[in-house]
Amino acid sequence: MKSRFVRTAGIAAAAAVAVVSMLSAKQQPSPGAARSQTKVVLLGTGTPAPTPDRSGPATAIVVNDTAYLVDFGPGVIRRATAAAAGLNIPALQPVRLRVAFATHLHSDHTVGYPDLIFTTWTIGRRVPLEVYGPKGITAMTQHLLEAYRVDIETRTNADGNQRSFPEGHKVNAHEIAGPGVIYKDANVTVTAFTTRHALESYGYRFDTADRSIVISGDTNPTQSTIDACRGCDVLIHEAQTPAWIAVRPESGGAPAGTFRAFAEKYHTTTDQLGELARQAKPRLLVLYHYNALSPDELQAAMMKAYPGHFVIGRDLDVY
Ligand SMILES: [Zn+2]
Ligand SMILES: [Zn+2]
Image (spheres, helix red, strand yellow):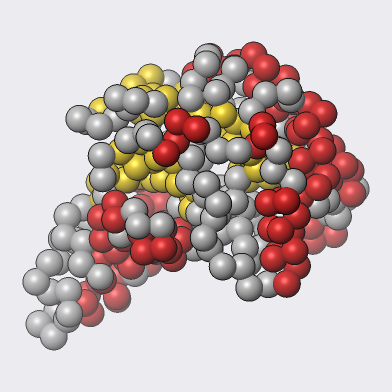
């Protein structure tokens, strides 16, 4: 589905047009998406790079008017608001965000955590968030609550505007012990699988009444991702093109080859993703958390690597 988000940056707008104009038959959204009760809403398709048109990694699975978040990168609540209002998905009204899953604790996936906790509270969330993630999510949560202690005290004192719902900033953090079913309710069963990244990391499979959706997080190609999908309806996966990795400047003057070595161990090239998707056989492959020289270069690299149905995800796309 075409994003309704208005891109204001000139370069970003040009890039968006390029992507839209390049959509081939195999790049159209899955025809089942319009009829489905379960929607995938891309709230942020970006990476650590602060690109204005691609917010930090965040994805929403919306089932029966309830939203489940995967990751909370920078901008998550603004994008959720844009989806709620602009795409008419009320489940993404920030005050209704209650359940979230972190793939790993890298900052690009979690910088939006205080936004998720406190913005939703200040606009009316009254019950605790339920947040699932790797070991360390509990400590991160406690540290954030402590970091904002002055805010919490001020908003809940006798003069505070949140004093009538002082529980609303609370978070129940749940650390995942390992792969397997980690969450289940009337809408969805969520299964975690181990991925291969620079720190403890998980991908998630969502099973609903009408769809199966797998999201990779950041990872090297893994058999566990293939096994989690196995003909799933939607596989959302990260990717970088080899040409981009080859020319990416080192950050902060790090020695030459530092990022390349990191990417080879902990991320996925478009070639590797093509091979993975051939084995995983998703009905639709959605690229997110991608890096490339240009939209054209990314599209060409994936067309070469993978003959199946894929799209290059953009913020506020719905599948
Ligand atoms: Zn990342
Ligand atoms: Zn990462």
